[in-house]
Each structure stands twice: as C-alpha cells, then as structure tokens.
Length: 153
Length: 153
Image: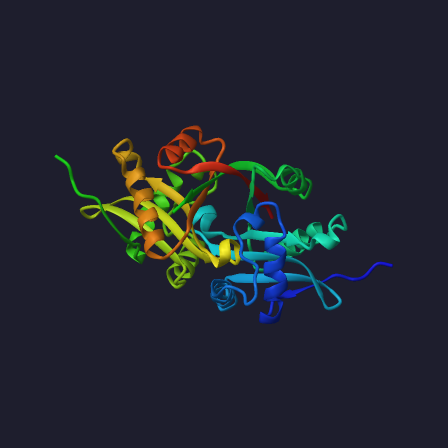
C-alpha cells in the first residue's frame, strides 16, 4: 500500500518531531540537543524562520506523521543581473522511512517551489563526509561546481 | 602613502560602481549586463536586498571611490541548536586595486559583522574554476569541508 506524502509549512506542533529527526543523524547527533523540554534556542530559531518571508521550513507528512524536513531560503542577489536564489539546508528524513524516495520528493518539491518564487538557481552544500549525498544530489541534476567553505566562529 | 579603507552599507548611488565591478570579472563578464541605464533587474534586486534586515550589501571605499563589494546574508536555522549563519556572496574588488589586501579586509569585516550578529558559522561557496580563491579563503581560516552544489533552473 502506498501512502501519499504531503508537503506543507511547519507549525510549532511539528518542532519536536523535526528536532528529533535532526538529532537522529550521524553528524546531527554530535551537535543537536533533543531533550524535553526542547532547548529554548530551537524555539527562538523556529520563530525567526517562520516570521521571515524569505525562509520556509517545510515538512513532509504521511498522515499525521512527520517524516521529512527541509529549510528553503530565498535570497535576492545583484549577481546574475539581480537574480534570486533558493538555498536548501537541513534536509532530513525519518530513519523509519529511509529508502522510500522521501528525500527525492523533498528536493523536487523545493525545486518546484524555487521556480514558483522566480529563482534562477537552487543551491546547497553537503558535507564531504556524507558520501552518498553527493551522488544523490547529482542524480537530481545538481552540479558540484563549487567548493563549500565554512568557518566556525 | 596608505589610504584608509572604509566599509559601509551600499546606497543607491553606489549601484553603478558595484555592477561595473561584478561585470569586470572572468566569470561575471559572461553573465552580467553593465550598460546605461542599468537593467531594471539590478535596481529591483538592490531594493530587495536593502529592504531585508537579514541582508547587507557592503561596499569598501577609498575616499569617494568604491573599490570592493560583498553581500552578507544572515539566516536562522534549526540545525546546531537553532544557530544563525552568515553567508558571504558576490565578493569583488576593483581591478584597479587588486593585490592590496582589499579582499582580505572585506572578508575579515564580514567575519567580525557575523560575530556581532551572533552567528556561529560563516560560509560561502567558490567556483572551482577560481583556482586562487580556494587558497585565499583557506588562509583566512575557512575549511573546504563541503561540496557546493548548484542547479540552474
């Protein structure tokens, strides 16, 4: 039996499930704090994201269950004759539902949304330690044309 | 004689000089349109950037001359316990003033500004065709830990 997956903006009631997914990840488990009550920093970030018209926190749902998440940031730039870009970050799927193509559907949804918003480019960075991720994104049409540089403060 | 370099938010009067710099670049010259009057898309993007409290278009000035530019985007994320990031994009220096360390000062200014805004990370992507850029950013402390993936729409 195939269940439909719906995509929608996250609400505050989804935050616990989202942080659980962020924490249930090889790299995420080293840097998140999934505990009850949730650290206040997550709530503050949630409100900052959802109050910003250029940020969208998107959840994938199967019935009442949250099975995936991603954040899309829309940014106006002067480069490319004043073109808008969409940046995807924090893509995660529930470990109970891996291998079902949910990640693919999330990214395809983001690409479609980026077109609706008039973006000329979709971009993301992926940690070189995530060996499968690069192939996954290349299969979806992304080109690894850039180095992704990070400086921790 | 060493002249001081000042950094400030760009104003509309700087836009012509900024687009001239974006165009006076190996890759930029293939994708920008520096002509008089400036294409309206640059003005629209300028207003979208300067009206957004999470975007700052910064110019480097020597006296009345605009000699460098960069855009800094501040983004709230749920990852890293709800941490903010600063993303640097569109870094250019005037071809008349290359080799004077202006790029270094621009990036150092952005890092300082990111700290002031409470960011835990500064990030950027650089085209793998820009062979000198990677070393430049690594010397400033950035780690090329990620692949930078782009999908043109």
